[in-house]
Amino acid sequence: MTTAAKPRRRGGGWLKEEFGNPERRTAYLMVLPVFVIVLAVAFYPVADAIWLSLHGGTPTVTGSFVGVQNYVNMFQNSDFQSGFVNTIIFTVASVTIELVVGMAIALAINRSFRGRGLVRAAVLIPWAFPTVISATMWRLMFQDQVGVISYVAHALGLVSHPILSDQTLLMIACVIVDAWKTTPFMALLLLAGLQTIPGEVYEAARVDGANAIQRFIRITLPLLKPTMLVALLFRILDAYRVFDLFWVLGGQQLESLSTFVYQSVRVSQLQFPEGNAAAVFIFVSALLIALFFIRVLGMQTSTEE
Image (cartoon, rainbow, N blue to C red; front, side):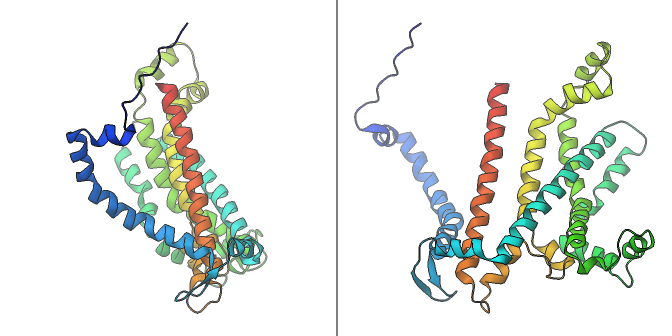
């Protein structure tokens, strides 16, 4: 079987072909101001940060070009290493819990029952609280002297020392608070995906004798996959950039990538080049995560087509 040869483009290339058409030229001229504004607002700060991360100096004076030395110093910094490990642990643990619990909540409130609207509204209450307020509220409950959670944990013998002074317990507390606050967001997205699945598909499966677990594995999960990927992308990027929860609940004891950047780029600190390099590292790694999910979503779309 032979394939048809692709038509050759006219002389002058793509630019001549595009701008030779008056309608297309007018369209490009109308889009140009917006394109310039997007470049200036979105890309110039990023390009400037990358440029500064390759130089020494201070927040007010750009030093000499040092190449990737700032990145080498950043990876050798013990605070960056602990912040990176804490960020990965927090992201994996919190997003996993939110996905599992959010799925259970979405399946529950997707059913028809009396008072379903009230239950849906009640589930969303934690999500309405700002992160700083949630962290302050939970910090009081984790306090060793007056906190109800600390009192119960000590009474049950689960902990033997103050929760807020132990790095491991503090990380567990951060995961719990983030799961409490953000699981409703995950449940809301999954619920929206569940409601797009036709009921006739489940009815046909019941007629064929499929039980609830088989319907969940064979119908719900495959059809809900695009929604799950979008929800995971949002939550992973959000958890990966965690700052205020660690800063408030941990009382500045728990390091993350974002807290390392903040503490490094302050004018009073002398780690501005490393902090700048860490900020670029967060941007690039978050971009790679986003591209990975977009690639997976693209594969899913092409498969469906």
